[in-house]
Picture 1 (cartoon, one colour):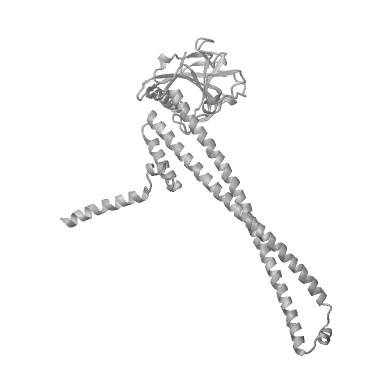
Picture 2 (picture 1 turned 90 degrees about the vertical axis):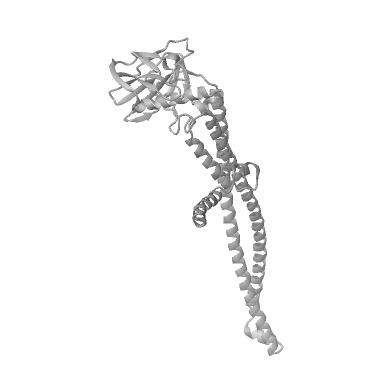
Length: 399
């Protein structure tokens, strides 16, 4: 019986040992112990982000994910700054070494020049003169040995000079490489700081938009999910009639008419072709617009820069609630980002709520039942044009 228990407990022991090895540091250590390896903390927190992203989407989980991502970025900034400091220190040491090598080269070159002059002068003394000038045979031998030593010394000086020059070149190359690494690290640091600022802003906007209200967050989430479901074939669509450019095709739905599928009265406008989502800015003509959010939030909700020749689907004055392609990898839209332009006709009591076809084509109307915690109905229209273009009009009642 003891042997059986031993073999049952042994695998558990190894599992615990493996778990301890895989997670060598804890979140608490990462926050409180400055000597903990930064890369271990980054890996641990990255796993935490993945875990949070797989959880059910709630406001609390999204804020927690933001906080964890902020910690990761701050750790990466700390690591980049540490690497930068180390590289700058190494550059300083290399600079000192290069200065020392430069001095050595100058001294060796001076010695070489002196020896060249001496050897040149010595070369004018013939062997016969050397013999005549010698007092005896031993004196001759000493002079010959001296000449030989001079020649050998010259060779050593030349060899040392070549070696010192090669060392100088290597030190200089290494300094240039480290200088390039410093520039690269500075660029990385600036990118990380910019990313950190963006993450802080996104978290701030999330709290501003939702007012830390779980109900409002779930409504925004339901709206985004419903819009994506509609344009990817989730709704029932029926042919209504042929329309010309500028024809009325319906009106923007009031909030109560699309409960659970809209955060407020607005038109979500998209452009598709051959199954691809296109930027509406390339099709809508230039217009004067007003943004329903402050300039400080342009980086979150985006701006419009229309440059096409099609009229807008609503009357002036045009107010923009959100641009195309913004909030990629955000808490609501995911990697695709916002796929259209959200707009309304000025303040909700001005300019009317009419929605118009931007181009002639076949009008289809449909609706989609939102599920989840805030069910409701999303009404929409689409117009198929002769050139293969398809325009979508969401959160409106087609007629």
